[in-house]
Amino acid sequence: MAYAVREAVTAFRRAPMLTGLSAMMIALSLFLVGLFGVVAHNIRETLRTVEARVEVVAYLRDDATPVAIESARAEIATFPEVREIRYVSREQAFQKARAELPEFRTVFGGIDANPLPASLEISLHPNQSGPEAVQTVAQRAQAFPFVEDVRYGSEWLDKLYLLRRVAGAATFVLGAAFAIVAALIIGAAVRMAIYARRDEIAIMRLVGATDGFVRRPFLIEGLATGLIGGLLALAGTWAVHTLLSQSLFELDWLPQTWIVAGIAAGTLLGALASAFAVRRHLQEIP
Image (cartoon, rainbow, N blue to C red; front, side, top):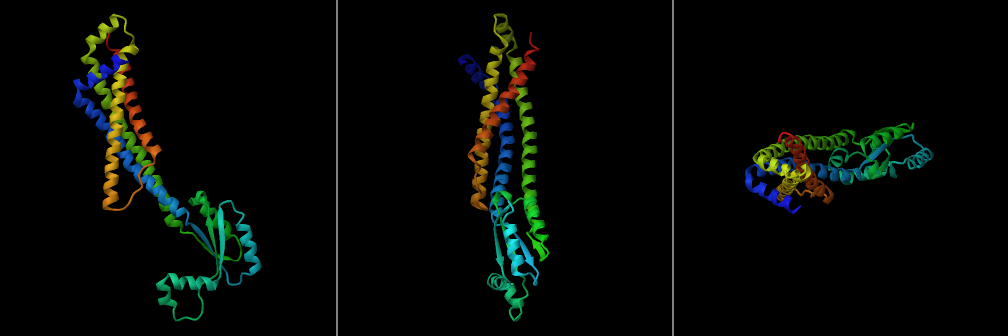
């Protein structure tokens, strides 16, 4: 193992530019993944905050009886998605609108009659606040005959979840594309290193060196290249995150598990690219 490490260090010194290019390509691929990861993570955190506030509001007809309303409250409370249900009378809705909406006071301030209906405000569990769950609760609430209308902000909720899916897909596609480019560059670097040492490798085989012994330095070199790329990507992502947080708006940093996974992915990418290239190109040396 000591020999393999020395040979890997020597290979870095022989072709620092090519090795640096390999590390930079891995860093660039993981850097882009990291940026989209920051976006996706913050969107997810925003969704969690929004999910805690998602409500389905069922507006009731004026002829709804207290018995029917109480029966509906008890039934809706048994839905697995529902965390809490509150009855808001017409008078309470009127006072709330006057207190929270200046436009309401301007338009209806001089009217004695109350134009607002009573309603049932249905709060959902955070893990049950996806578009499908909200829509299911809304449809079941709409089925009651005394419910006139149901609102839950379907348009903005769907767009928010669509944004999270798009961010996740873009992270995967761009990261995979740059990872492929990085693997090709690492393979080219390994190929050049093998051809530069083909005479030495041939002699090592003549004296009994196994392919595993010959491959080991190249694998360590690829692993180290991937590790360096992962650390560079982490530093770049942190710099951009800090810049945006200080100049635009506060962003949450990536979870620790995501950081470890990113560095491990870079290291694994470098090792696998080297292993594939060594196995292929060693066959060309007698």
